[in-house]
Image (cartoon, rainbow, N blue to C red; front, top):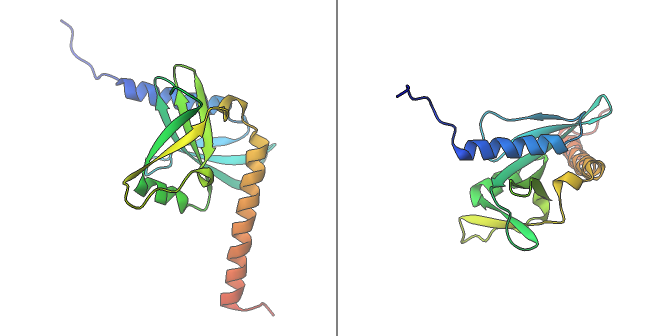
Length: 168
């Protein structure tokens, strides 16, 4: 009998497969980091235009399952606390559900998800299977991130001027 070694659980292999699939779908010039402490953000994406950094970020909550759900939607279950944290982020948040059996991911922007009921500890977010990660229009996502980021920055600058007063 040989000496025992640590085992790699199936859940770890599935998580790794989902991360690899996501990276495969990402534009090659965008960067992806895996934050060391996971409080709802599994991946942080820096968006580039060609070789130029843009300052734009996309946050991703990545879930995975061995089998795809029946029907036209996948589901992501979020604790209400996690939903609240992601909702309050200044960056755009994308929810992704990876199915190993289909080797496909499905996505939805958190802003398009229903709000959780106050009497529930979790929310189930339906993600249309037509939102295939392998067919995503990253340019459209980049433009959306830019629009939202510009709106938030403009609001912040207006607030700074109101607090500090106009420059003379």
